[in-house]
Length: 114
Image (cartoon, rainbow, N blue to C red):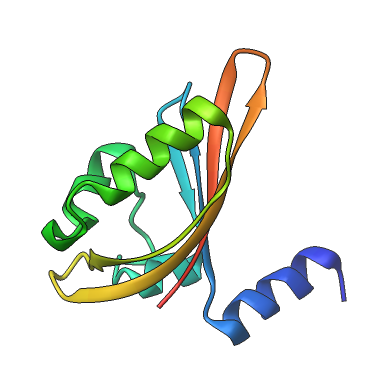
């Protein structure tokens, strides 16, 4: 089994979704499992502009502050917080991520699980 196939199988078996945000290009890549967790249609693309719709008011800016701090300091994050699915259902997720820098470019990567 290839490393990519094994990685995909592990994410599926454990229920872990991943996403990556390329800040310079303002594009996001979501794994099928992340789309399942957030009840996003598998064929739909997710853009950074979609993210506010997936944040629960109960998080009170926690996700935004966490990402802003990580971008500023490069410090990884690990938190549990409420979120909303694309269908409006409230869920709680565990989120672990980090910022990757390439010169003056930054990208955020995250692993999430309900």
